[in-house]
Each structure stands twice: as structure tokens, then as C-alpha cells.
Image (cartoon, rainbow, N blue to C red):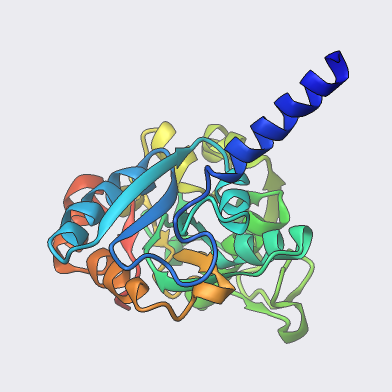
Length: 271
């Protein structure tokens, strides 16, 4: 009898969880309401503004806020969300590869720009030959730092090593920069001992550095680390997504980002 009661309880719980998904969990998305996942912080703040703009066009956005980077994609893949807004394509591609999912990007949103900072020089052009350059020691952010230097013309990466470049994959390094790989969170504390260093936006802000005002080089919206709106592949052409893109990429939202974040977050749909 106890076994039967336990089985009935489990079945009831499964039924409840199955009913918790989004209205658009299968088939075409609801053209009046979307459930959108965001991470807390800037993404949450911006999508709250997007919701105000979208409401004028008859589209309701229900925000679901997450505190980690995995669950927003898991929830989307399982149909509990219609869309999410928090990630760049390299992260999305890695998630799809690791979890065998088919999530796709459908519209550019923002860039949290990585910056190059220096306590000693006001311009990257002032760096001497052999300058000590600090960069994150993880592959994603290390590559990101190198891409910034290449876009500015200071190094050249080997063509066959472009996907995830390391300091050993350089074809040209005319300044003979001495690359020093460090834990990303520790770089601001080591900046005084370096000639220049690449620092992620969150760590720069924690150290009192402004990407817009204090960096000597700043990542541009051409970066592959621009963030996107993401949906399940089956929904990528649903008409309601055009309403969402229009609201997010509106002048009203752009001005909100510029005023609220002062250059620490960059609207990335206009290059």
C-alpha cells in the first residue's frame, strides 16, 4: 500500500512539472506573450526596459531571472522558456556541443566589452618593445584578448588557429609583447606590475575601472562575443520574434543602455 501511495505521489509530481512549461513549449510561439530567461544584472535590467517597449506593440514579456549560466539554456531546451537573453555565440556553440541541443541566435543584443588597461601608459602605441602584457589564462577569454589586439593591428593570429587562439598561435608580434597569463579575477590586482593587461568588464568595474573612460583599447561591436537573443531552432522563424527584435533594438532601449551603463555595456546591433 505504501509503495502504491509513493508511486501515485511521483506520478502526480511529474504531471505538475510537465504542466510548468511555457505556452510555446512546442510548435509555434505565442504571438501575444513570450517567457524570456535572463541572468540577474544588466541583462535583467535591459529586458525589463524591452518589456515596456514591447508592450506598446501588444507583446507581453514574462521575465524569468537566473543566477547561473547553464540553467537559462537548459530551461529553453526543455521548453520552459520561449527565448533567453544573456550569452554570446562562443558560449552558445559550446553549450550545444556539450549538451546535444539545437539552440540558435536570432538577434544581437549587447556587448560587455573587454578592455585593455594600463597604469603606466595612456595609449597602446606608447608601449615599448617587449612590454609585459597580462591576459586571462582561460582559453575563451585569452583568445578574446588576442582578438582585440589583432583587430587593432598589433598582432596577427595564424589563420588555422583562429577559432580558439593562444599566445602560441601568433604569426606576427611586431612589438614582441611578452604575454603573461593570469587568473582573470586577479589581473586588476597585478596591473601595476604589468605594462598593460586585458580585463573583463565585471572585474574592471569591481576594481573601479570604467571600460569607456579608463581603457586604452576597447572591444568593439564587431567582436564575436556580442550577446544574442536565443531560441530553439524550430522557432527561429516565428513571426513574434520580429516584434521582440524590434523592441530590443529600438532607439528607446539603446538610449536606456547608454544612459544607465555609461559605456560599460554597448548596444551591439549597430556597427
